[in-house]
Image (cartoon, rainbow, N blue to C red; front, side, top):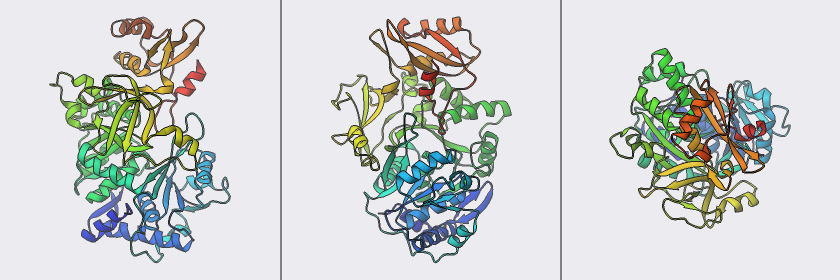
Amino acid sequence: MNIAVWLQRMAAADAGRPALFLGQEPVADYSGFHARAASVAGWLQMQGVQPGDRVGIFMKNCPDYLITLYGIWYAGAAAVPINAKLHGKEAEFILQNSGANLVFTSPGRTEAVDGTAAEVRCVDIAGAEYAEAMQAVPVSGPAFRAPGDLAWLFYTSGTTGRPKGVMITHRMLMTMAIAYFADVDQVSAEDHALYAAPMSHGAGIYAIQHVLAGARHVCPVSGGFDEAEIFDLAAHFGRVHMFAAPTMVTRMTSQAKRLGRSGEGLRTVVYAGGPMYAADIVEAEEHFGPKFVQVYGQGECPMAITALPRHDVQDRNHPRWRERLASVGRAQSAVEVRIGTPAGEFLPVGSHGEIMVRGDAVMPGYWNNPEATAKTLVDGWLMTGDMGVLDADGYLTLQDRSKDMIITGGSNVYPREVEEVLLLHPQVREVSVVGRSHADWGEEVVAFVVGDAREAELDDLCNSRIARFKRPKAYIRIETLPKNNYGKVLKTELRKMV
């Protein structure tokens, strides 16, 4: 089944229900949302787009993002969302690798990509061609697609080389959405999905279950993340759900305290996409209240590996509350999660190893990349490349990417364990730990620190909480940590610096 059928059904069931907003201004109800998507699909078919073709979206967050996304699906094509913060050359690689010959763009992004890929046709949503698409004869409904057909071609962030195209099928998206209701949160027609994180990533994927529930979709006028704007929109609409990277959560907490804002109107903040340190989520929960849910996923299993529900985040009476808070929760209903060796052999409960995932939310492979697919999918299991440990209750604690683990004197050091300790110091705002080559020990631990803490105080803190061999041998002060467009720290860049 085509995932876009859910929009068609909602438009038929409750046509006048408000659907799309730009800031506080209504743009379309569900009938209008459906009609515009159907017209985009009709126009795409007039341009020769066939079921299975790939169509790019290189846009800032806006209501037309959802209209074009569903228009692509109505036509039976696969969407190739591209982060609007990427350079034109990076977007060019994605468009060429995916085989897309048409891309929808927003003002400012058209110039970035136009001309870099001459064979790709750019359609600016502020231009005449898009206005023509809005007036095209609409299709009657979404084209039939089989569950295993491609719906979304997601390109990894590419921190260690060219990004790979993850094939996300209609079945994967449906599985993710249904598991969300079972394991993450409930959504009602009175809720509002607020898109402050890039819609090319988790925020856009989460539109699906909000369409199914008939919720409202709100795009900030800024087209991105602005703390004050988020607080204003949440207070205006109420019952607001949003997806946020951990760095966004910490910024929201800091700004809320500075501005005297309580987060009125925020109902659920799902945080994912990188490590959320225990000290940061405790501070956020203490300020905003029980609004936080953690999800662990990858592009290869989008938003669907584990979940830590709000009860576990706030339940301070549980004797293992802090341990659970430092975890990423338990396996979602649609997948199995195990810990194994790099060869895919299962390890006992409590063992440290690579996180393995199996289920209907796991990708069938990488786009036109059988070598990478064979390395990542082993006997039906997704080898995530993330290291972790499962406890007897099924809670998964992430350690680091396998490539980030530090081996010093034959002993393993997981950077996150050291980072968690250093962040307990009140004058450490951010920290990232990497390994540095050492003639005698192989590697030594080095910490990049944003903040004003003294080295002696950091040493004392480490010595009081972790083994001495894990203590950083050097503290490097840095104004800001290098990050990619999704807010993940680029440890590859830090390694170059040391």
